[in-house]
Length: 289
Image (cartoon, rainbow, N blue to C red; front, side, top):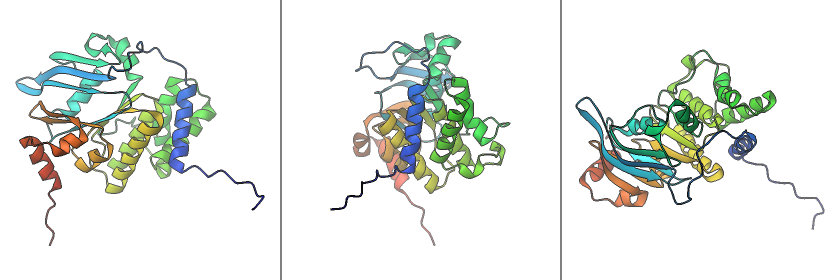
C-alpha cells in the first residue's frame, strides 16, 4: 500500500464558481427583507390574475404558485402573456384584478421602496440583456456587487472573474455590449443577475436566438443554481426540450388562460387539445433535401 497521501480531487470549474457565489451570498450584508413565512407557503403566488391592454386581454384569471427552491417553466406560443407574467411579478406592471404575492407580500400594495426591497431578492434576466451600454462586460457584472456593498474590491474582482467563467465570457470582458452577439449578451446578463445575489431568478426566453451549445450551458447553469444554492426560478420559454431539463412544474398559457398548471410529467401526458397541439408542433422537424 502506498504511503503517499491522497490528494483532494480538483473541483470542476462550474462547481468552484458556484462555491464562490455561495460564499459571497453568505458574507454579504443583510438587507431589509419581508418577514419569514411559514414553510408551506409558496414563495410566489398568482391568484386569479387578469390584465388587459385596451381591448386585448393578455392574462385572464390566471393562478399558479412556486414553492421555494423549485423551477417553474411558463410555456406557450408567442403573445400569450408569458413575459407579461414576469413583469407583473417584478412590479413593472399592475394587474387589473387578482393577487400577486412574493414572500407573502402583496406586490400591488407596495410603494417604490417596498418594490426595491423585493427586487433585491428577485432579479430578472431580460430577453434583450438590458446591459449598460457604456460599461464593459466586466463593469456590467461588477455593478450590482458594488451597489450591494459588503465586499472588498479584491473580492468583487475575484467574484466577477468567477461569474465570467461561469457563463464562458472570458474573451469579451473588455468589450461593450453593442459589440456582443445576442447569445453573449444573454450570458453576460445572467452573470450580472447572479452578481446581485438574489433568491429568485426570472428568465425571459433565455434560449431565443442562441446556439444549441449555449442553450445547453444555460440549462446546466440554471439546474446547478437550484441544486447548490437553492435558487427559485421561473423560466419563460417556448423551447420544450429546454423546459424538460429544468421544470419541476409547468404553466401552459393559451389565449390568456392557464390551460395547464402542474408537474412536468402531467403536462407531457395531458390530453388537453391545446397542450397536445403545442407538443406536436414542438416535435415537428422540417424535412431536409
